[in-house]
Image (spheres, rainbow, N blue to C red):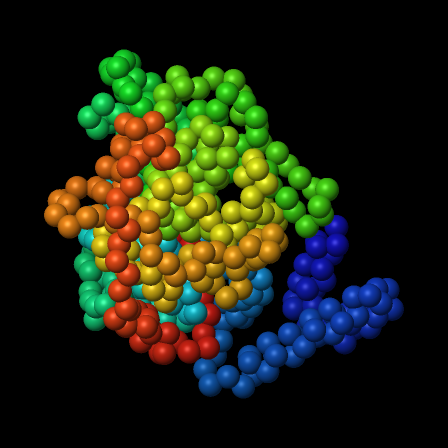
Length: 468
């Protein structure tokens, strides 16, 4: 009730322009809120000054929306304001069909940064990679824009081309031309890889569990002698909680999958599995990397904690917070995306910042192993200045030489992480799998990504918002 009262009071103040009157009422009726209402009065004074004295005419609606978004994004990287158009776009994405390029993005110091390209989308086919910075769209800078504003520039009619300017480590900025498409995200698919099943889950939208169940059932029916299963969650940016629970439930016979805990320590919600294992008890390995985030981390953490699968790859992104979407006036005024809780694995581990560490750490390439050895190159939830803490006194593992990387002579066209996952299935466990020599550490060639440093210099002191 208190939240709605504050929103109502704010609307009255801005709409009626009677700051002095409202603030007097606030002092008389709600002394504990005196400072809050005084700051609302300050906001009204600033808005009035900008309206009268800014060098050009301003749009009050845009200013107020930007102020609301700035207030929310100051809390953590994943809270924000969705205007009505952005709210509609978000609902389209969770339904698994929308127009665009197929990118999941965030903001880092005023620069739009790619969390992950989605499988088989225009951005994926164009070679956009996790960790890339998008500095311009069709030649126009997006530095300092909120992510929602930048995304508007990226979207348009299917069939039309858009040019993204990309800043990537160790390279000069370059342009990528991508043709927009209607994105019909098929979030789960399955195939055989030798004696082992391979189930790829690329996102968590409303269709994911149904698609995964159908794909796996068909694969098992056609391959009754399947010896094990690899669940690939690499570069999966996450999505809907109920779908993460659904995918985990496919392989667990019961017990806890995940819990979420809010501000009140007593406010704990637990999600449990139902009897039945869609894989029939086959041995499993989960593949993850630093692009595996949120819902993907819930699945990896649940199967790891419950000893249902071993995890191979790299430490996950570390987004262990819950965002609740709160429509305003039924969505007519957009919605708030507000962080309301943290996720915890069945053993009580917080995913936030620290991520899920694999049972067998395997870099995809030698270059990637070198980046992991250089802390300056790591991109994760912990790299955000205002990211929530894990509340466990734990910190994400810093720069280190990963346990394994492709040896000399390994065919670069093959998937080394998948190869090692199949080795784990073949030998029965990570402990029983013969280990490869640890990569030799090297001195870092540069301190920071050249393109990223340039982008940050241009956008010094500016902030951006969230999502696409």
